[in-house]
Image (cartoon, one colour):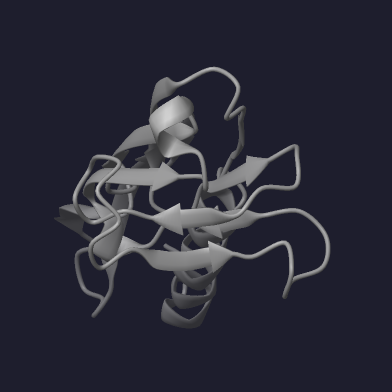
Length: 142
């Protein structure tokens, strides 16, 4: 039988592995304002524009600039625009450029990160520890 300290160490290593796999699964999604698009992403993914545009988050989900939030201004910011999705973005998120009416618009459907909540399946008899089984984007950790 495995000592309690070895079992606890194993469980800690397992949880660290699950966390690192989930953290490394974020994607960078290239957005081209020259081609209007409907895209999908998950929390933790990053939208990145390959040109220098003014980029706004449009709460209206259209070209209506009411309450738009500046994500990137080519006059004030260096580099290229990017935006990392958070839990607050789950649902529909729309970005627009200065020339939205000419097609500089991209709509994303944002999903929560799948596989992050561990499922408790069984407890180890005689120990105050729980065995956690989880799957993170194609990786099984048991």
